[in-house]
Length: 573
Picture 1: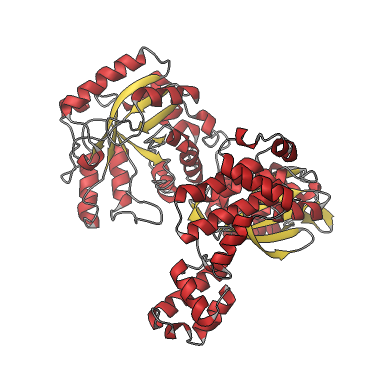
Picture 2 (picture 1 turned 180 degrees about the vertical axis):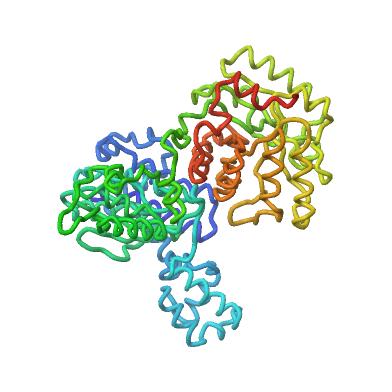
């Protein structure tokens, strides 16, 4: 008899094998949904099966319920065994190598009997792969490069994608009876825009039980290393993770050690030595005496430093900035400080939801105001709003306002044209409550041209917020060329602010430029760039990026209440 975690693992394997076969993606996704439902199940699985109530669980239909019941009662699945028999040996492992399609896996299996990454690597190194029909030396070289990336873990994934795995994983670890405390560490805790792995630190007096529980997480594809208090795994999809277990008295120190970037920890260790301490993963030593540190704050207190937030533990410069920080400076911005949603799209342009739907969701989130900033006419590809429809939108905003308590503000995401002018005539712009000014076209201008364009836009007499500043899409499109500091100088001298875009595929502007903007006294908004009600929850990514840039509550305009925000961003002078 299998338990719910074993069954969830089997369902995920079926879904992955179906995906590799090229079956209907919705069918493959159904198995993933079923696995998630089982992981979250608090009722007794056996009782649900015996009472034939599995279909009451969200996402589980009659066919999937039958699969789960078969696995539970017999410990096997006829369909899973059939899928395994239909596909080459090692197909799940080989599919993790970039460039290894099912067609290539089958061809190499039939020609050379390859069924593992190790066998594929050996065949490439000995020149056997190039001899297989349809391959050749170029593909062989490409596969070797893919194997290297697979083995060295030289691939990073978007933070948003990593969190989809990391948050259920840490919840799973916390669900172990032997776990006293557990948290994510590493790049995820620092809110890096891409991460290479998932780090989890757990406090426990029974490390072996927690390690065993961690290894049984359904999305673990392979346990790569396992010790008494550590476990390294590879998850389905290729991302890797590591669990470190420590006694509760060392938990804060271990979490701190596993969170900071190497350069930061090196600088902090050097400072500790200057003060007569030794800093390691169990905390601070003075001679042979271990100093008590129940919290991370205690560690910094021993060193005579203010607490340094995880998002600011990247390099030596962060340590210097913290050590010289004004004690009267307010705290880093937090998600709870944000009072209004900025930069939101609706069905009037390329959004998925109506004004009312967006308003009701923002209201449910506790927001006090919402800016409706659909695209301007030049963004024809995104259904930019012409003058006739703009007035229709204003009328609809007024009607919806009568039915909701959240304050609705009329706005636009106005294209910055090639000349630097803003889309819409000044007479229209001045009637709006808020303007996001963004570049969506002609991104290949050279740095001098783009700088002139942006400087001209920032000097336009209306107040505007520079939207997704450099137009990047993480891992898909590089930032466009421009002299950023020169543009920031223009922002500082103009009626303008800068957006920290919370779209997890943008996160623009980058923390390094946020820091430069702060030096100039520039104000910010933290946006969602939401094109749906679900995307309003992008806010946490915007806040995480803002904190990496060192933004404080007093520097963020949408930490103001509705009246103060509207006054601060009003386009007309």
